[in-house]
Amino acid sequence: MNRVVFSLVLGLLVGAVPVGVAQDSKPKDSPPAKGPLREKIDPDFNRSLTGVVEKVEAKEDGSGTLKLRSSGPAGATPYQYTFQIDGKTKITDPEGKPLADGLKSRVLAGAAVRVAFVDEKPGGGKAPPKTHFAQEVQLIRAKK
Image (cartoon, rainbow, N blue to C red; front, side, top):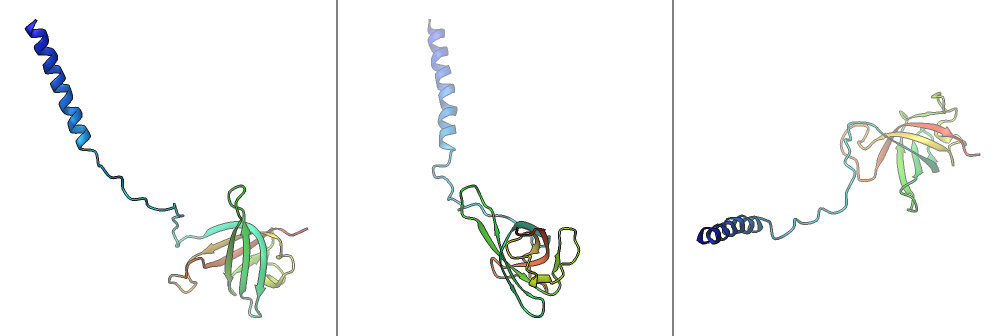
């Protein structure tokens, strides 16, 4: 009988010690929240975006801005992007041929387009936040 009681007491002691140690080794405070998830991008590579042109501002030298609306999650407010256009930006039709009037073309307003862009200034260096520089604007479908 003594052996049985001794074995039970020894088993309880051996089993209870690791549980107590394991509970003490857990951190008591959770790490601070990191905030909302953000898109991580590599500005060395082109990115592309498809959307609908809302506004075109063309200057005489072939530069200007293009405001694009892109869909977001279902039921959410659409995303809006503004792209800087310069004389080197290719503006093409759906087949890849240059658009006749470039940025001044009437078919761009309300059209579905694909924009290839970078977030660095054309001469190099960082750009202000939310500034995108278009390298190519390709017409997908003109407004009907």
